[in-house]
Every structure is written in structure tokens, then in C-alpha cells.
Image (cartoon, rainbow, N blue to C red; front, side, top):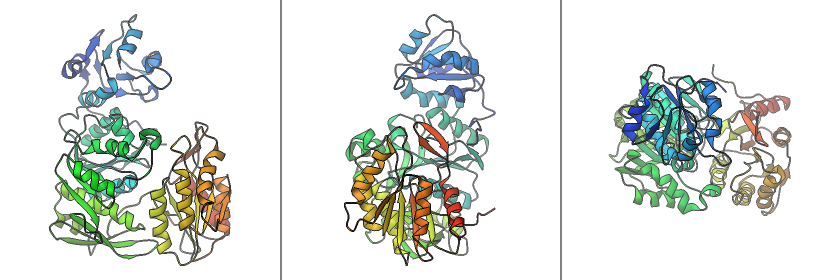
Length: 515
């Protein structure tokens, strides 16, 4: 973790009375000036407005004294929170639904309601992180200063900041927009989750272009089924949320969304299906790099390359390219930046089919996939390029949709020669219960060449004991995550480090990092 505070440095303070007037809010107590907005006491800097929301177990207003001690000068809350502070003379800004108002309020305080760098937002089940990294890489190839917000990494003009949520809370989103504007950033690539959209984390943000990757079985613990899950994603493709859109129609859910989009949009698909206005196709591939072509609706074609594996990653790259052109970049400029005579797309995507092995021995990959579709796409891609056996190590998250686990296990066994089920992020769920769900599906496929090894360090070492040169190992789950959530505690952990140590112990080298 970086522990850097993601805040603009030079914006003007805002009077609470002006904010209240512009948003129709009730101001109780003295009028004060505020510099920023903080949803958690740990994020408060002096002069902040502390946001006190109703949580699952208690109301945030219970922490207001801690907030004041940390430097907060006012509280933003609902009527319940305001009534709890009625015996004090502390400044309180009151809204009927503070979460719904949090985005517009943050944009007023950080000055992002009038102007900020263009935001390229991408949503879907799988491929969001990869597409965001590819967007940012295309911006860099064009010579832009950039900002990036994903589960894996958050940075502004080359400086990294802590990243925990897939999409930050609204105050952090607007602070990032303001900081990006201060640095002269040309574009912001942002990964957007369905949960973020349903909780208004992008309130007050109008994306220049919104992109859709795909939709598959995931997050039923939050949405209950595919239709409500798509409904949550569809909120990004509304005139209040984005100016234009690109929708991948390789799946039926993409086609369904494209028919519902309420803003100017275009579509993307594989060249084989020909369903999209934009198309993509693989030209050649290895376990280190893929060369592919993308064709625009105008008939213009660019052939480029990138250091990733799989047709699904090509789809992500094509989506990013289409989004850039929809955002105003000339196709010819994009082609000149990444086409023939260049090094292709300068991207490194942590934990997404990330190769961590060297040139000798087996190929070893990390992947953050935790869904049946992610398993299918990645295993198919690696299988097609592996001459020997394919071994899979997999675990998944606790306190999440359990109905997908047997489906994931069955797909794993259908596509891998050996499946090793291990622990990943159990959170507050019994790890054995999580493993049992994956094992149920994996053992339903005959022959059941399936192993259960709870300790992930032991699991990756056992996997490496089964392989040699020409074979591949894919470790699903942790990706680039820097911790494991065990019992609600985040324990420092690096799957990449463990895999490379295990490779060295087996007598093989890990991938050399670029300085």
C-alpha cells in the first residue's frame, strides 16, 4: 500500500452555505469552509467534510468525534445523523438521501462539476481491469499524460495511490478527477463495477465514452440473477452517465444491452461473427505475445501486437481502441501510435494472464478470474498454445455467490488436465465450504484428476512438481492482489512472489522484470 492521499493540492475551499444552496440541502449550525470530503475517518485531512452514512451495523455519525479529532470541520449526513448531533453546535449538512447526493456534493467541493479530463469508463463481468489498462496504454502511446483507476492499481500522472475498491467511492472519484486536472492529464481510464453504479459512486461524473465487455454468472449475492445484474450495468449507458458508448456484442447480453442504450453508440464483435460495426481477429499468437487486427466501421484496419494471451484479451484491446476513436481520437493517429513499425500496445496488466515464469521450464501464469466464464476464456487461450499438459490451481472468494462455484469447478476440470483446489480469499466464510463448492463441480467430470490442497503455497509447489518444459500452469484467484482476506483481516500476500520462489525451488527461473 502506498498510503498517499489522493487529493488535489490547489483547488479553492467551498463555503457550506454555497454547497447547500446549489444542491438544495439543509445546513444546520455555523457556515464554514471545507477543503475536501472524506467517507472514512482514516481518510480525513484537516478542513474536510466528514460523510456519516447509515452502515450495515451502525450509523457513521457515531464516529463524528473521531472525525473532528482528525480535522473534520463539518458533517454531511441524513436526518437520523443530524438529530443525533442536535445537542451540539457543530456544522451539519443534511440530505434525505446522502449517498445519492454524495457525487454531486463532491463535484461541487472539488470543482469537477464544470470541467475535468475526459473519462473512459468500462464495465462488464470480465475484462474490465484489462480494458482499463489497455485504454491507459493507448493514451500513453498517443503521448498523453494519464490517470488510471482499477481494482489492481490506481495512479495519476505516474504516481500510484492505494486501490481497494474496484471503483472508488464518489469523494475519491472526484478528488482523482481534480488531481488529474491539476496535472494536465489528457484522459482517465476507469474500471466501473455494477456495485459502484448501484451505490452512485459515479454520481456527478459524465464519462466521455462508456464501454461494455461482457456479462456472465457472477455477483448473484448482490443482484440475484442476470437480468437485474445487467440492469445495474446499464446505468452507465444513460445520458446522465456518458456521452457515447461502445458495446461488445459477442454475447447475447451485449446484444441485449446494445438495444437498450440511450446514447450514441457503436458495437464490437469478433470478425468471425461479424455482428459488430467494429471487428477484431487474431493473426498470430504465442504464450508471450499476440498479433491481431482491428477493423473500424469505415473499413480502416490496423494490425498491432500486445504482450497478452487469448482472443478475449484481443476483444478487450479492440474495445479500448474503439472507445478512443469514439472519444475523438483519429483512427489514423491511433494506427500510427501502435501499428506496424511500432512496438504495439505498451501494456503490462498485473494478474491478468500474467506470465511469471522465465524462458526455461513450464509456462506459469497468474489470473484474477473468479467466474466460470473467466476460467473458460483463459484456460482455452492457454490450452491452444500449450503443447504439453495444462495444470490449474484455483480458489475463490468467500462471502460471495456460492452458486457459481460448482460451475467453475466443472469448467476447470473440462479444460485442464489437472485441477488443484486451494484457498484464496475466504473472508469470513469457512474455507473448507468454499473448496467444497469448487470440488463438487470438478469431481463431477470424469476422469476426476482433482486434488485438494488448502495452503496455496503448497498447492503451487505441487502443481510445479507435475510439469516440465512445454507444460503450463495457471493459478486462478489472487492475481496481483497484495493480501489474502482471512477472517476479515488482510494478511500481506503475493501470489507472484510465491510462484517465482516455487519456480526457483524447482530449478527454473522466473520472468525478468523490466527496470
